[in-house]
Image 1 (cartoon, rainbow, N blue to C red):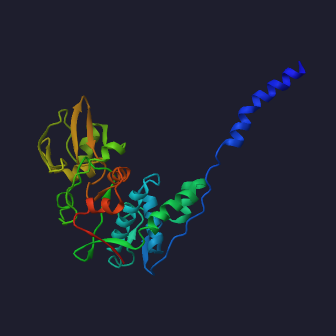
Image 2: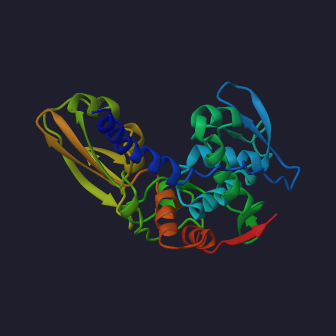
Image 3: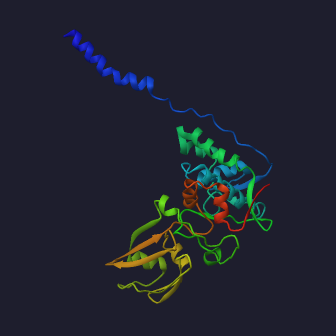
Length: 305
């Protein structure tokens, strides 16, 4: 009986020893250091109200970490690095006491302490990946006719990006509508739907309540985003409806179902410039960050400052 117990114990223990001795240990990463190749500083107005002077490349790391999931392909992160660096370099010294805020009004920026809190045990791996993307694009930015561009970007396209002149009323030759067919394959927010009560719908748009919702004269841009429409006889721009209702995209449609409005959207964000999920889709297909940037920022040149 005693021998049987010993044999049984040995058999039960075998899986443990096999897993323990034959499993491959998780790779240990050494933290990658950031390369500082300039003495340029960014004056960042933090949400606290304080203004911090942050070295440019450190700022770019904090923006890429705040604006793009670290799980994205390296080439997409590199494209984001160049776009974010271009965006801020265009604004240096143009806004009085500070250059940019740390919010979506400009670019979301997280400092090193915030990233350590956000990533916890994954900090070394994640910060190293983003620093690699920034280091491998160090001091690179995009120019058009010798000037740094306004490198706008957003989350997810509806299959096309939008012309800057259509959404922002400022037409820029490098922010033209281009196809972006990759988003549908990789973005979970490519399509969306939500219910809004008629009461809330009218209140947000500043309209009087009516039991019947009448949508007419809907005009769309070449990218299928709404440019104007009439709601119960009142004319709105698609941009106003997008902001007032807090929609994911200006490619939207409405359907009344009882006392609710079903809002359907395609894409996420204003649609101008680089689609971040489009960049991810391109990277997954083997495109380089240079090719990603050239696709979304038409006619631009990648330069090193």
